[in-house]
Image (cartoon, rainbow, N blue to C red):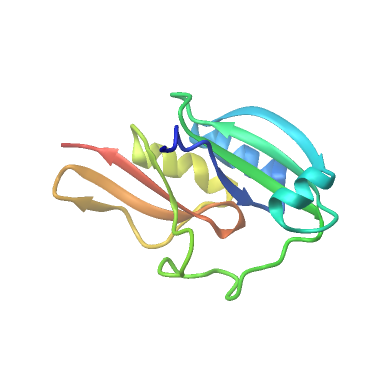
Length: 146
């Protein structure tokens, strides 16, 4: 038996509307929003008294999704350090292929995106960068050039 597909990656955020705006500017489409609470949520997630709001964002090709989650109860906890470096254990980053890296960065900056360093060139095939998105999540962008 094997998996059928990767369904989504969840990102916990403190400002759901700002996160939706960021990923929409990146080119993702809001699929829907919902309030989640109840025994099924407590059992699945392993916390008691869950009340949350989620937004499902879909990539333009329809194959990838991000579930943006804002916890109302219990309150989300902050990582330590607050802005973990890229080599922190656990989820490292989310990467998106883009057709115009410079334009994408310019459009995301008003939504709080900050480059970790600068755009780099990988073997004249890709231009790549890491930036911080909502809730400090590292978003990697790649533009194929070769």
